Length: 350
Ligand SMILES: Cc1cc2nc3c(=O)[nH]c(=O)nc-3n(C[C@H](O)[C@H](O)[C@H](O)COP(=O)(O)OP(=O)(O)OC[C@H]3O[C@@H](n4cnc5c(N)ncnc54)[C@H](O)[C@@H]3O)c2cc1C
Ligand code: FES
Image (cartoon, rainbow, N blue to C red; front, side, top):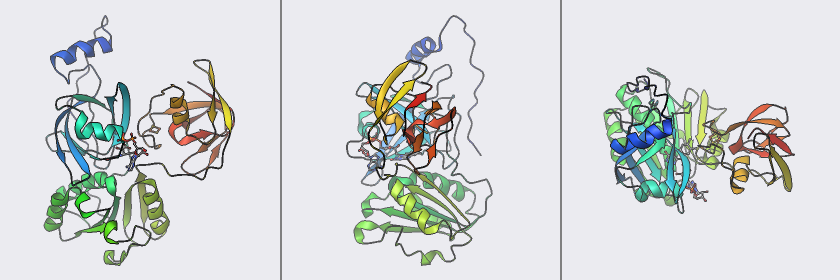
């Protein structure tokens, strides 16, 4: 069940703009806004040796989320508004926990890990993502997580734990070193409560194979399992290749973009029909990245083709999907700028 906050209709104040209202109201209370969902940093703690968990108090405009879903958060880092996606766990008291892996040189993960002062606020989007479980679902599950891909699995396992673990569930969780494990005590406690939940820790630094060569015989018959996989693009791709035709259902979400063979080179011309601007961009580079490189910042969120924030009308021209290499040539089509690159000259409604 989606957690919802009581959210009465905002007051109509014709002579005040929303931005003006929010500017002054947040001076009285950091979470008071007219409509904008915000969350305040309450606390942070280390999560294993390579991640941090931040506890956030959202305001009443945050519409809630289902276990397994994601949100975009936007923070000001080095004077620039920067958006990234995370997979929170909703706590029973309405607060959210986000666990971010520490990424070398990473902007937002470093901000969450230390730069952001306790009490400061960030923008939070409505939730998105389809890797969720229906209430009362009793299908045997195989959960596959690599690195920070454990975060949506943790939320799903809490849901299953609360429901009494209605079916056999196995979680295989790949990490580089044992100390990197997130939620160690919590996962062990769930395993102790339910004999039909099994945690398989796969520590690659100790020689355990990655998903392509991992021994899944301890899981038993794979055929009736619904598989949910989450992690970097290479992991998700390898899991799909190995399992998609051996199980009843295979669903996956990647936290990073796959690297496609660089088949397109050279430059093409973009015409931005609303602003009247024309610019040259490299073929093969995601349009969002190419536009940002020229100082144009369309709305964006996950940058992986999941959240729909960057959808934009393509008037004419051919684009290539950077996830699967497919081409789209129909005119007047809505495309995601983050996972499409220009193959020919294009007209975009920007
Ligand atoms: C739907 C979705 C849900 C996500 N949920 C989570 C989550 O719950 N927890 C979490 O930690 N992350 C999650 N991510 C990834 C997250 O959005 C960011 O990409 C990540 O935190 C890095 O952002 P950054 O600003 O710190 O690094 P950036 O400044 O964007 O990147 C810095 C450098 O690190 C590299 N890099 C980026 N991500 C990784 C990575 N994971 N591993 C290794 N190198 C990397 C980049 O290529 C770049 O070179 C999710 C992503 C998606 C699409
Ligand atoms: S930024 Fe999320 S779909 Fe493009």
